[in-house]
Image (cartoon, rainbow, N blue to C red; front, side):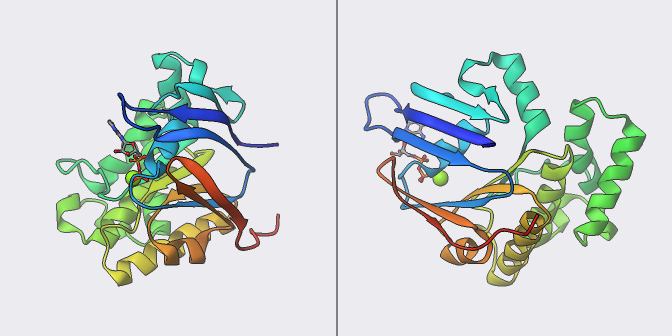
Amino acid sequence: MAVIELRGVSRRYDQGPPALDDVTLTVEPGEAVAILGPSGSGKSTMLNLIAGLDRPDAGTVSVADVRLDKLGEAATARYRRAHVGMIFQFFNLLDDLTVADNVVLPAQLAGMSRSEARKRAATLLEALGIGRHSGAYPGRLSGGQRQRVAVARALMNKPTLLLADEPTGALDSASGDDVRKLLTELNGEGQTLVLVTHDESLAAACATRTVRLVDGRIDSDTRTRMGAAR
Ligand SMILES: Nc1ncnc2c1ncn2[C@@H]1O[C@H](COP(=O)(O)OP(=O)(O)O)[C@@H](O)[C@H]1O
Ligand SMILES: [Mg+2]
């Protein structure tokens, strides 16, 4: 059964041309979908609709059987906490919280006890190879390390979907490799992934499927790699 279903989705801002124009897309659990396309082709718009950060002007958006286009504000916030982990080009960490406190935050908002959240954060940070930086502030870490913290935070609530918008866009090539590997491993463990990128090597390394957008429409949709056997 599909985990993401966009049907006839359009979104336009103000009087401009449509950022998304009648897009239909279905994603199955365990896929790693790379959304590629030139700047302005609608990639971030599509990701934001799936994340519940934006609403379509026409069409329907369902994730995990929830009709996002019908949800009110509170239900949208609940949907995001329960189902979505997101990572961004510039990490979006809170610089005056420690690494551990950044990672714990989504679980606390979801109502997990502080001690349980601390334990899970420590496990994730350890697994991601940054356990010894738990007490540090993000500003002291390299870009690659900060993106690992962001991944730990995104995984905190065991999201149905891990969404990434240009996750290697601000990294040097070694850190970029690191994040490519990490995302590929997570998908290998069964994590459904949708990533928006200009980075063809990220798509090549990590994606089981590549969707190309041009002018807000799907130009091609290709299976690129076998997913992990499950
Ligand atoms: N908040 C906004 N207000 C007005 N126009 C926007 C906004 N966000 C995106 N757009 C426009 O929508 C189109 C698609 O943008 P976007 O989804 O950000 O593309 P991409 O991520 O592929 O670069 C572009 O023409 C962009 O200028
Ligand atoms: Mg974008």
